[in-house]
View 1 (cartoon, rainbow, N blue to C red):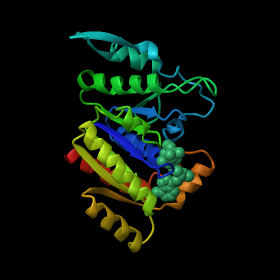
View 2: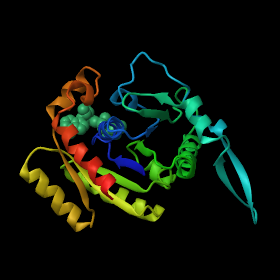
View 3: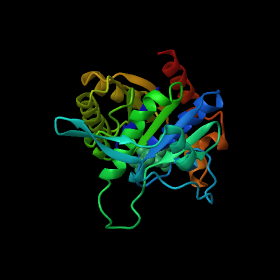
View 4: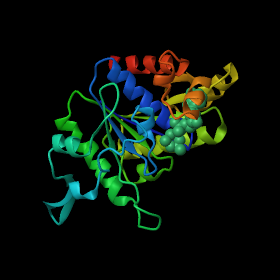
Length: 256
Ligand SMILES: Nc1ncnc2c1ncn2[C@@H]1O[C@H](COP(=O)(O)OP(=O)(O)OP(=O)(O)O)[C@@H](O)[C@H]1O
Ligand SMILES: [Mg+2]
């Protein structure tokens, strides 16, 4: 099962991606987490020590352009997936292996098209060789990864929404683009929900745009408290409200 987590800036994509990975992993699944944000911070939620430099970031060296006839060509990963994992994978807590998109070496060193292609093709090749593994792709805030088709080969995309209009409006754009990419399943994750009114506002908007809501995740002070000291909420309090809500999401994903 391959999942992408999208949404507007700061809605909670990384918190949800990382926590969900760890919930799957802690319950016995082998999990592949991909940090698709060029400004990466998924490793902290995955419990990787801040001083751990880890393996190299994914680079365009792992893909090649191949002719497919009629003057057409495509990109593909040129080394076996297992080798990708061994060379670039970082072992994190709870059975999770992390791969990170290459971040720009320094400012002004060009665009990220190559990195997006690497992630897209990795997700694609993970299809056949990583059967049985749960893969979660944490995306960057902009629509860039949708425009570049980085999430094209996932089975499902969750667009995270907060109870405020601009976040909901952004969700409808993510959902529209996911449809254009041919991703069959698009659902919302309602995050940072504090009140019944918050819940109603999200329900009404999502009903209007026909976007099913997978789960309501409450606003949780413990996530903030954990973040303040650079910890994952899973390590801060594995029984936190956020963790409980995401455990329900994990169960519903497996039940599909
Ligand atoms: N359910 C929640 N309750 C309280 N705070 C939360 C919750 N979910 C996320 N947060 C907080 O919201 C902030 C943004 O979270 P996070 O970094 O996961 O968002 P993001 O969508 O990945 O951001 P970016 O767009 O920058 O990648 C963090 O301070 C995090 O602790
Ligand atoms: Mg993030």
